[in-house]
Image (cartoon, rainbow, N blue to C red; front, side, top):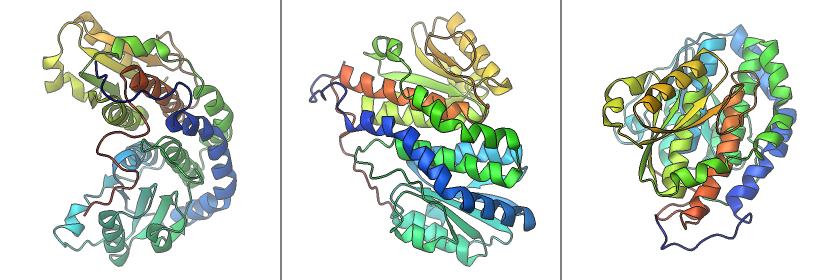
Length: 347
């Protein structure tokens, strides 16, 4: 176990307090952006894009993965993730007629993200920016600005801004698709989040207290949060956590699993979640140490039932509490991971 870093005082970390802010911040964002979601949704129905390009890194890119599944399943438009180095390092041009470029960022200031957005805009794409800093260059470059309204985030580990980005994407897709069930679930999200951020996932702390490697499983709407949970386990807990789709993990990755190998499985209440549960069972039969969070079913880590596209946001909100507790249990400060800074400017 890692013990050489200062221990943060219990219940006083910025990561925890900012996670607890998420319900109120999301409620404010939904209310303040309602007109913006509706206007962009109407535009996209009137002038449907042939493709959606997402531009993001880190936690924001995990929110983009979540958005990809929402758009492709509820609207039917293919979504691709931009590789920023294509523009920032290779200086290549892009042609994007009839495209929507969705840029997601907490700071809106990374040079590679800005260069990529500029290239897609000059190629003809409409740029929609989900950004937390309204004064940022990204906000100024956007054709449609949809602020995250998450407030100043001080902890290096992003929490409320990532939750807000996912909720914001759900708001856009609800307006674009006209899906009334998703819209109703989004309206209920702040109250559901208020419960999710206080769910007790402490049962996961001791099983992970001494691990060095693990898998995180999700699928469908839940794959993006598997990516985000794995990142948080790396940066706040110094665990080499790798995210996999419950389908993909059955290929090469399953070969390295041995008795006691730790695995966190995040299951929504739909068919994708059912496959996560099935894969987790296969791992458990091989002796893996499985921690399961299952919306609407029995599991060690409690998870609420909602619209399947909303459940991942609730699962993530509960997970952040586990990550914060686990970091402190391992003697680490989740607010100041080594070698990291809040704003990362990559080229």
